[in-house]
Length: 504
Image 1 (cartoon, rainbow, N blue to C red):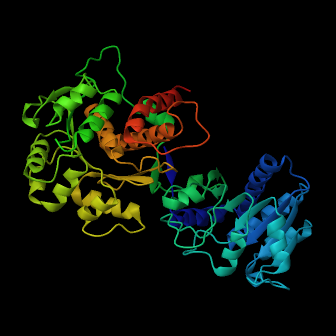
Image 2: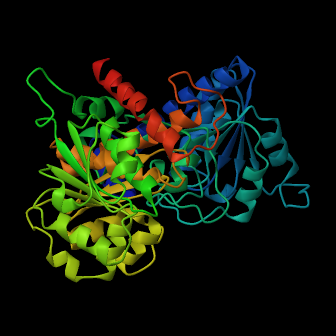
Image 3: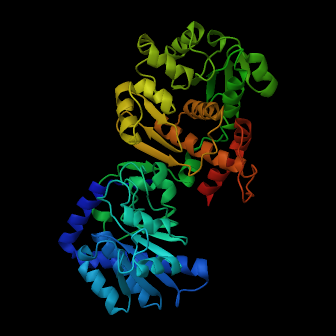
């Protein structure tokens, strides 16, 4: 599990570091790392370093200084470097001097002979002839999209981009993009990942993220967010041991589907089976359909006849009428961990009395998409998904898994996991039913609910990616849209992959 720190946390750690290490020394450490990774990208893209061209997009402040110092280091490796200064009078003086001493050039963005967009001829030439562009426009303190001149320069970039700390124009805290912004192939960041590297569109625009140690480790507090790694998911995923039987591995009850929506029952039950649950008990009107697809499922017609379970997965396709309400009430009263999805969330949002049926000692997981979340929260979901999920988790005393391209998992005690899939292949009907079944199976196996959501979200996204690229370990170059059935079929492969990562 690796941490993610807010800009405020990073700045506070930097101030502590500066007590023992002068700020210019720290800047040169950061800049040297930017130069090293830029040279690597140059070599990968062009087959060499010396004689290649790099353009630096330089704003005011320390990120611009990092870019200028990086340009000085690149000049020493024979790279032609031109800094395009967006605010010449505010450029980092020491970095600019270092670049010029090394033989680099600096030109104003709005210099002589501007074109119709106001970009100077030298600036336009630097960007258009570059092999790689380094984005040092703004830093962690910036908010909002790029200003017109910077946006125009970025629009003209047609080569790989290295971002210093974060892609300019991306909100550092939420990852939101509200206007023109940089799309980086590589982001070199310092001390630790920031929220913009793992949240929303910022995660996509950050590209590959390289974290560089500049001496902050001893000064960083507990991280604001956490990201699970495949190896720890594989190590924590429940698998049968020599002394296990079908009961000790966990018995999960699935209350899903209806005569109108039998597919929800098939998908949720199948996911619980594929997650290696010891036993799956299905309870509902789609029992015959579930048995026809998954003969290993013990299927009955009602939750009252289901038998003993260690956890429940409830909600997909049960409806929001009286029968769905009765099913949800029975499950909440069971005293077992519950993963409530889809219609269950709508019922809970519309009928506060259902909360009274809940056993207060039994863990509850809620898995809303944006619309369902708005019903729970009583207001629309804004750009700060982490704060929103955290607040609802605390108010409902439940683990909240907020679905989206970036999945946010908030625990009632304030802990937050983030899973960034960097693709949208699960955006298809029924994929949420698969996720519900996975979480239910993990809860039944005794996995901590917060981690169960994180494990399931990762495997779910990995399975979707596999399915979109052929469904096997051998990936096709081009992905294609998938249905939830294809995603479900790829779940075992995804689990094997995380298990293999744990054994490496």
